[in-house]
Length: 406
Image (cartoon, rainbow, N blue to C red; front, side, top):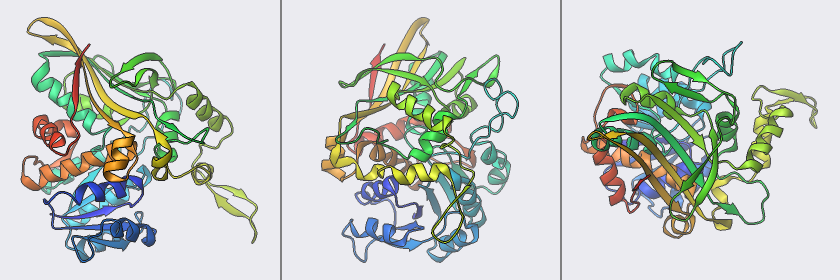
């Protein structure tokens, strides 16, 4: 397997450090718009002349990405950029005849008239619209293969296959007790992506109704997270799992709730009120005359890079899937989870917990594709594949998952 990794930020760098310990691939080309960043990610591995090589590419330039795939004879494109670049990379991979893997799906657009009741363009709609072309060509696009979405979806498949006879509700629940010393507001993941998923209308799925939307931060609940994290208030947030799980797993209801905390949600609401969550450029004075800038890009530029926060971060992060249904005629309720301690991930890989937890899952998936344990054609989510090989290999990577009866 020869992999083109596009994006050498926090998650992309963590991918290289995890993959460097595994023998399943022949070459990984680490590409970024900032060549110096790609070169730094490769240099940190200490594998000069080895399997990793740095390159520069604009993720929005489809012909350039396709040419880079061809130049290095890569058969897989792993997208570690933000969701704005999903479609150009998705199309570039198809054009080059490569397998495509991402961790977040094509962007949504709210319903123009009833944004908090009906779906407009849903997450992943643009990719699924091309599923027939991928299937007909015999090619695979594995979408939503991070931690959430990704591992959370694998948990749902495992629950359906081995833990339940019928499923009433699947609820992804994400929480943490992470703090950053010396920072009042320092998101542990891309603020661009965080704003996108938290301020868009959340999507809920119900079997008798299909997909519909609610108000941002709706249906608050307190969820007790394992491994000492404890109770955290969680709210509805737009996320890919709700769009993926019903396609392959039978459930009466599917939700995604994020443990943001009141202070964090208040900050996001303020950004929205001020229009600083917008992506459309606005004109501002510059030293050489008016310039156009995206308000959301300004917010992102003004905050610390999440990848640099590890040394000041303390605590744990938990990704998991809560499932309620029946087994052998009796009610059952479980929480399948994966916890990463920032102290461990920094000591073992030099990566903060959230980016490491996101990065390990696509590397596991790539290894399963390389060995043939996972195979398919078309545009498929993690739920379309057997869960047990993934969960066993994740444990073999030194990061076991857990199951708690509720």
